[in-house]
Image (cartoon, rainbow, N blue to C red; front, side):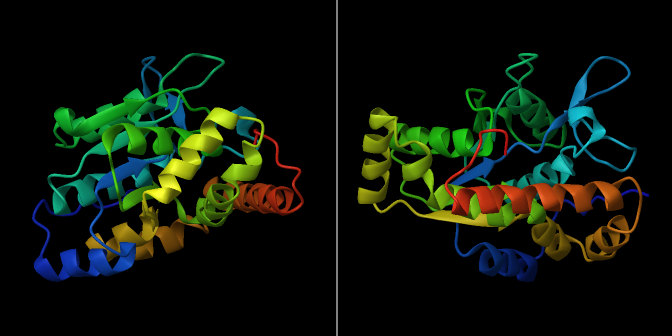
Length: 243
């Protein structure tokens, strides 16, 4: 089972549909990490789950990170002058997720000069913190398109809305967060699966089948439980960085 690669040329009606989906023309494409997997030759790739790719001990895993990269690739074609930020690293191994995702985009035809590799973050909330820092440093007013998977969207939105509480002990960042909002910077949360559905209708069938295919079917059920636990922890002000 494998996803079809869409054609390089994207018709005008698809570009218009993408613009409506993501809510505007982005100033920055911010590709959130969806996890990486070590391959047999020792290199790393974005997780796919199709071939049983599960990390984190196989308990939950990071599911379908490649779809974030594919959605970003096509958004990069639609918005050819827009910079792209890839994100995060593993603090235990030191392996940069930002490099793996950047290299994936480059192999698929994205100009390396467009990519900013941000490896300082290790979690969803850290990625948002770094996004705000980069926005201030680069004078980005937005919209900043935050690209993730469908199952991750709700917790991402709530995490972003809770940054002042999650970083309440970090006075320096709270000052940066205030500047960010005072500047009127806009953010867009982008569902990578929906982007791909529009780019190529075959993806819609593909994702529907994927949810009934092992190991994804069992893994996504557990991951969605994990996400709901994270949402509840945010609502109860008991959020741990592990989420």
